[in-house]
Image (cartoon, rainbow, N blue to C red; front, side, top):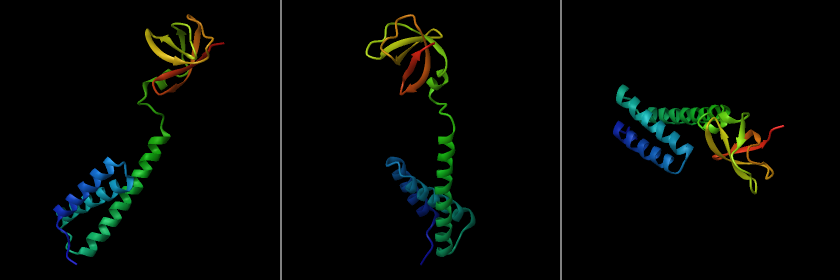
Length: 143
């Protein structure tokens, strides 16, 4: 068995990465990263054995897969800071108009937000923000 040149590792890695991104495949992304890194190591160090390349590829793909899973777990454990509305939870707002069928708007800090809550909230009533559903605030009557 002959060793592959670095450009073949890079081409195969790029193809697997593209497929993994397109189909949201964690394993395909890990295989692509392993192949790209194998090509980079071979280019830098000149690994001459096909068996050494294969072993390096397996190890680097496994490290990429495990590292990706750990990164995902850490990301899932952290608060969702990219959703600006989560910073509003627990604050007090004022109903801009009467809530109808559980839907209305609230004013907080000069900004108007869509909100859902009990149907009996009247305009001008103070509400507490209890959560976020997509881009809509969940509110409850304060008191």
